[in-house]
Length: 189
Ligand code: FES
Ligand code: FES
Image (cartoon, rainbow, N blue to C red; front, side, top):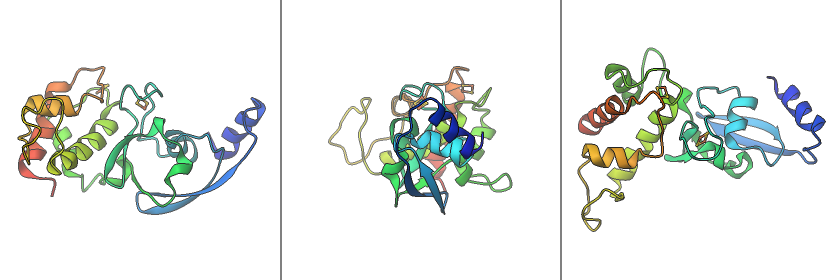
């Protein structure tokens, strides 16, 4: 769907009364957008910028399919407005690697067969990268036995808990955990 058509549909429904000029930095490139201020970041990425690697599952913050990285932190793109992110560094799955030079987390998902249909995979990978940064920074999780410890070993239980916001309806969880554990062990770079 083109940007114009999407906007027209919104107008036909009587929902658009104001437009906002917004500049988003996505995968290192500044993109100028003319948006209804109520547009979620997820819809801005998919419907306006045509970055369809980021998926819409529930549109309610419950499945994690829409996870992207903003300034290195994971976020559900369906739960935040695009206009709130001028000046932020937004990274989607398209910005993590290329077919000939996969990001280590992408390569680990391939090596460990960590997907079936692939619908959740972009969100899983972005979330996993954000999660590893959180763990590296010493953030505890609900599974952390000693929350005062400066660091926590990323056991399978820790990985499962920290990735619990990302649902996989194909139930590829054991392989997803194995892929993330591999990257945690060898490092991202
Ligand atoms: S689409 Fe955003 S959490 Fe499900
Ligand atoms: S691989 Fe199908 S939903 Fe996760």
